Image (cartoon, rainbow, N blue to C red; front, side):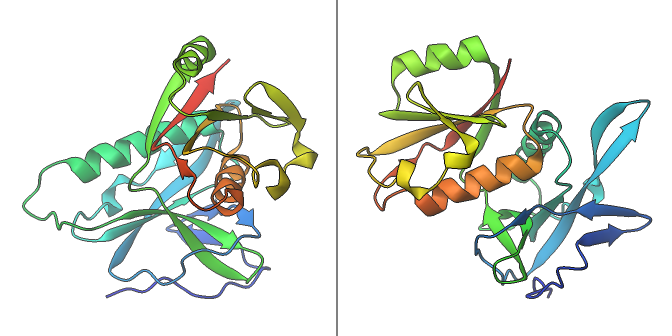
Length: 218
């Protein structure tokens, strides 16, 4: 039985697998640290002839274990979403080795506590859509609030805020049963996960995040 490593020296942020390495996102937010019975899935940063792509190690997805997904922070979100979708499909596939109750987690370096932490994604579905498709969804008003993230601008119900003003005060007074999250596909994985974890931290208690999260192409 394997247990997730609890501590991490900040001077060592590369997780190695064979002759490759993954540079984890660094985020100052606490999270789960003790995950037993897990295997690790590696998603490497690959660049060839100026093209960046996600290089997924598919052989470590043992269906009888929890999966800790280690993704290089430099990858664009557009390359990461197909990885999420592959993992979701693999997890739901029927198998004689499948064990019910196993979960999927995203790993990151928690610089606040100097530990490796994880974020569960079992209940989240990711859809990659065009911006016009997202705009149509917003007109249907699934939730009272839609929060759209890009590298420099956060848009909350069409009100724009600069990234530097992003903090708990923008969310702590939201009066809503749920919020919908939308992410620009050009975000780096570091930016995406930092935004996503901060939403979970800043949202008032009782406000739910819609289980489908949208990634839009401009």
